[in-house]
Length: 588
Image 1 (cartoon, helix red, strand yellow):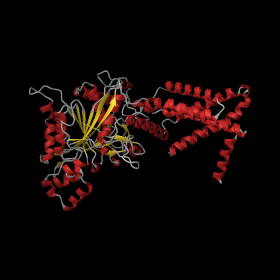
Image 2: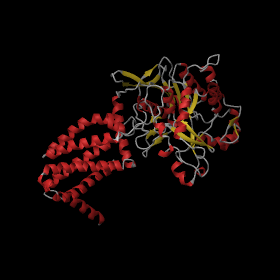
Image 3: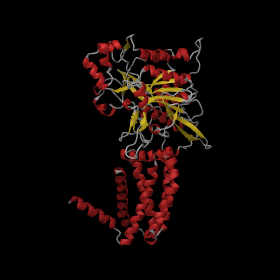
Image 4: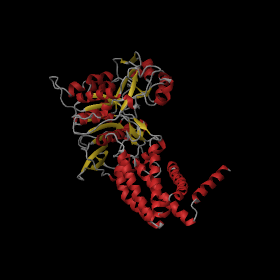
């Protein structure tokens, strides 16, 4: 609200200054003196253009970006409430298998993290019932302690487990002997907890058992994507110059007990990044299509879950083609990377300079089907914005079937035909309740102790005072859907922006030049609002550039109001006098 007040005050100040300049220009031009209406029209036109130029100049300023974000948030909230956002693309269908508070507390008995045998059963449930992609948005980086390992822990160490819920990898290596060697190159001791061993065995044999025939030939099978866990690289590892700006961006992957299992079943089982970028207000609005990492001094790129999923779907579900596409993408966007992770020579590859990217990468299609998806690698402005379409209403869902709580969300296609695009069910669900065939299944947790609930533009208000948060699994679903339907959001062409802006200013200025009543002005504003809102919510807000059109018009209307007030008061400098008085009072 403060930003809106500051921006509105800024526009008024610009208009008042323009009035001051304009009143000194008019006497020098006979045409303006002889044509009052023409002078009014030209003045309104020029103030609109000036405001538009100022906005273009400061378009990347964070205060303006925050307001553009607020406008896009507003449009998404309206569209999500309608539930009928049309799409030209083939709609994806999602299922979120949610580990909620009921499952976590009553069935799993509040474990430190989701038991690995339970995780394995959920993955198998999805793959056995025809899912296209299975995304596991759970922490799989830390092994479960066995009974023998727990007995070796001292009383003090057990207290640390209770306080922090999990041991660090270094602590675990010291007290139990589970992990040996360099923490950056961990190798597993043969002894695993039975739950971990069950998940390890399933993933290790997934390629051979599910994705190959008895003769060893490849066959179609679901892609399993595991969420990679990260930790920021320590500041001491980064150069002094870049440490502060990169400490939250450059990540180091956490290696766990599943590394060799994933490697053996690659590329049908892969790691991907679940990370998103928070805005200054803590809201998740933007993705990162990849995460640059440093493993020791080795630079690497880990694709995001949404990028890997869309790459799989738009390349005819061919994992070999996907692998090739991602490597090609890495080679084009990230060059000369060998020295990036060396001490005192660190350069952040997340926000790339334009001369570091291959221009041809912007022209090369990322998909092998008819989807026109091209990636730019840009990260500023509206690039990377997630267009949330599916809200989180599950906490208030009262829909039960056979004792299992679930919720459904539908959208309309171009022919206004309704499609089921999201089913949310707690993880007790079975095939008789929900259908998984050809769907993207995300396994996640909304339980309170999981720490995977986030502020988003679509926070569904359970009550009037406090909005609920959205689980990470549903954030991923919205990100996948956004990348599939819209790709990266590209700004409107400057030519289109200027054409619409100038046309709007001309129209409004012409009307204001002939209006003599303030009531007519109000009628004009209301009519314009009714006409523009549907257009703005479906295009301008989605493009994040509604301020570029609305603020110049606002300035023109403020200009007209000031002119009417000055005419009534008979003082051409009335607002200038008010500002000077306020300045003197403040100074005193």
